[in-house]
Amino acid sequence: MSQIPSDLKYAATHEWARLEEDGTVTVGISDHAQDALGDVVYVELPELEQVIAAGDEAGVVESVKAASDVYAPISGTVCAVNEILEDAPETVNSDAYADGWFFKMRPVDVRELQELLDAEAYAEVCEAEEH
Amino acid sequence: MTEQHAPAKTPLYQEHIACGGKMVDFAGWMMPVNYGSQIAEHTAVRSDAGMFDVSHMTIIDVHGDQAEAFLQRLIANDVARLNINQALYGALLNERAGVLDDLIVYRLAWGFRCVVNASTRDKVLAWMQQHTRADAHFEHKPQIMIAVQGPNAVQRLLQVEAVSGLAELTPFYAMQHGDWLIGRTGYTGEDGVEIMLPEAQGVELWRKLREVGVAPAGLGARDTLRLEGGLNLYGQDLDEATSPLASNIGWTIAWEPQERDFIGRQALTELRETNTQKLTGLIMRDKGILRHGQAVHTNAGAGVITSGTYSPTLAYSIALARVPKQATGECEVDIRGTRKKAVLCKPPFVRNGTAMHP
Image 1 (cartoon, helix red, strand yellow):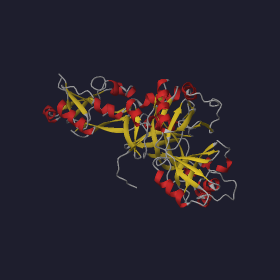
Image 2: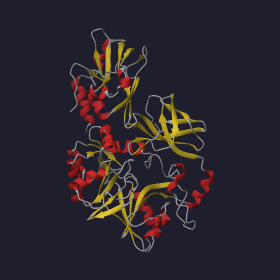
Image 3: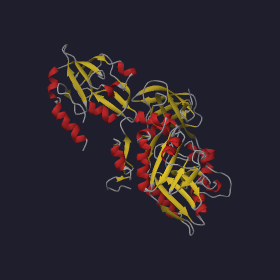
Image 4: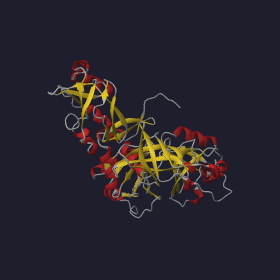
């Protein structure tokens, strides 16, 4: 069973989002997603200052077996990207919710977070995929 | 063919579950794609020993006085060249010299054993039926087939089964061991064996090999290993629309003797003059991963990637690509709208654990 921390919000496309104290939102992919992908070998991150709408493509994560798009869970401007992933993409597998984060956004409207799934609802999405 | 029944299971299905296999539907079979980490399984085969369940592949035995003539007509390589217990790799062609399947053929004391792909089973059996002759009988013979591959594969097998003569078995030769047929063959670019044996013994062998540290390896690792080894995957790198000449397996065509009239020979003879394409290797120079279907721009025109992956041994991306025959040197690959740098090279990329294009 994959880990789904209860303090995060989730998109049905398997990204997580965390509101930080400075008002930015950190985005990554879930433990379920990294497990389904297998060994991650390449991550393509968005550009700094790129403006992305909720649901738009914000990057690509590639495992040995396949490439998979990463979508922005909310609308905003990219204000940081995780450069660790450039040389150590496997961090996504080993630490999906902390060191394996993808990028941070300055949200257009922080209330968009409320439209995302909570841990319980996201667990149901994962459950449904496994059957 | 779209038969809508549930995927089949090999006799080793429960062993895969017991080993933590992540099961997927592959050509109508529930097969393990990995047992946790594809890279770890890949590395086990390159550095020590791994094992694959390949029981889903199609074993076809051919008997009778006309067995040799039957296969000489069907296969572009020539089985008449085989000594007893020797094997060859070859292609079944259609009249247009398109590849119906690639296969391994063993000449055994009683006749021939062909091993063809799982995905092409119905097609190949129908093709054989269509070209059947009075004294050549073929029979689909499902068995457990385990490929033990890696530099320590033979040693590990000897730890669990005393097989006299195995250590001395020449590559591409097979030997009978009781009910087992053991071939010094494989599809990983490493030393190793493929063992065909009855069900109960096969399950026991799998368990014993596991006990001596042979790593179960899934379809994922099998794909990265064969690609590093420059070996084609049927349906992806070659198919009915491509000839052996455009698929890097021209060496499997036996042109001599000239009077041997194998199916596709005439079309192939014409293609010898007119073929404009080749299947070759590609090494990524930029970051990113080469994948099936990406467009390649070379100094001689456009091409396409047929198989691409991240190479766990080399730690960069490699591919097989079908490009114009004259293409050489540096090229560009279109990845999601961006042109990335790559370079053409001759496969394989890795042989017996060693990088061929360092």
